[in-house]
Amino acid sequence: MSQEVVITALARVPAFAGLDETVLQSLARAGGVVQLPPRSALFHAEERVGRVYVVLAGQVGLFRRSGDDGPVAVADAGSVLGARAFLDRDYWPAGGTTLSPVILFAFDANLLEQLDSRYGPLGMLVRQRLRRADVLEGFRDRQAMNPTAALPEELYIKQHLCPCCAATVRSCAVRSRHLRVTRTDPDFYHHYEGPNPLFYEAIVCEACGYAFDETDHEPLNPAARALARKLGAGVPRGGFGGPRTLEDAVRAYRLVMEYQEAVAARPSMRARTCLKLAWLYRYAGDEPAEREALRAALGHYLAAFEREPTTDAKQEIRLLYLIGELHRRLGKRAEAVQWFGRVIGHPKKDANPQIVRMARDQWQEIRYQSRGGEETMPVREQG
Image (cartoon, rainbow, N blue to C red; front, side, top):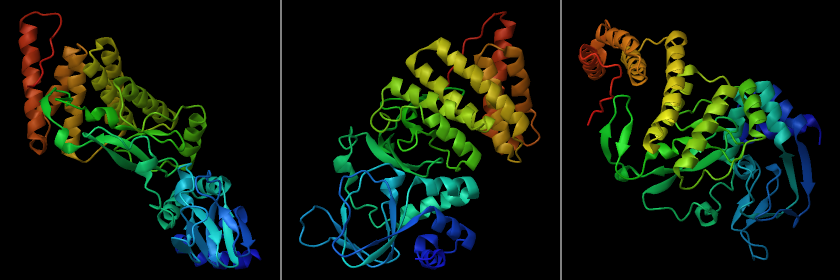
């Protein structure tokens, strides 16, 4: 089959609809055409997925078990087979056997790597389209085969999209009805009665090893993705999908910090991760480790203030306050007063009156402590 015919056939596949012809040419060159007669076994259930198939012509029957009398589903021309399991480094959830003469387009990881290196965000788009088009998506009851199936009642499985490889990452989270805040510290750390959701906000992708904060949805650019994959080659990936101990949570946040450094993440992202790690150490009662993490968070927040200007007055006021509060917690009272003063005197302070009140309270407490001649200032929590 000529390359021109393959390109024409790929253009008719819904997953590739609207792609530029140069991208289709790249796909055609990187993949290969497979032609099979009827009753040919294409793949078997529970085998590791090594290739993705796109049906260009003919039909493939999908069988839950070998020896079944008939298929439970049929994949026609334009169907994608195995993309989800391939991207997640998973297994075929069913077997596939040709029902007629079939022409398939098949590709492996080399195609996706070429898309990433040549087309950047477009490569991520193709991954997402392939995943959504996979007729095997949802074919398996994953919970029945997943070690996280028997979870405590307060936890559930939440899905995330990996910013590095676009794999679906399944990780635990705390059900909202079990979240009971008992008090909040001035740097916004919530104390909980019961499970602490902070344990599960650092996500680790088992497909590529990339670790990220659950609020980070921005796909990596090609250069950052290459750096992340290089780091991921030596990073342990398992053990983060189920319930976590404090040690598991700390290890996950440490991984996030390593990846953020490797891909040169924005200072604000790195600051948030360091602050969350400090909160974990506070939860554990490890004051030296907490102070180390607070110092790192403060450095990144200062860099964010300098390098990430914002027109959102509410967010800017919050950042100014947080910089002041971290100075205060680290015993730097003079610096804390200066930053709290910037909050109180902000020209748009009405945009965030609650934070302005908090800054004024902390500013007044520092003055009170200073008048008392104390060398150190105890941290007052907001109950």
